[in-house]
Image (cartoon, rainbow, N blue to C red):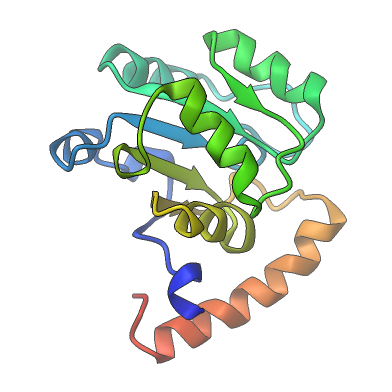
Length: 168
């Protein structure tokens, strides 16, 4: 069970992800969480450096999708800025949203990384399907009340993973 919560890679920010290393490992697609991963929660404003970074990922030939538990209109609005496929109301960590994204990308699980800010949704969901999982720090401390509660359990899980030597 603990291994399902353990990300393949943990980084501070999106900019710490080595895109060349992903390509060298056979990763051809990336599924991004939306809120507090590529855009602050409950915001419509994307940081210009993240926009440029995402454009660079796309320019390098990676297939990209967004999988979010958020409502359709919000996810569609952000995905449309980059002409990306998306899955809203994904109910992560359920496998269904990730499977739909894999179909949209036309890729197999071993070719896709999931990038997200939550262990119990993004990392757990991605690991359940055998995807590479990359855990990033949230962009903002401003979060949905349910997420704030979940962060407490997440901190406990991280301490347990570190105590077991499964995570740095």
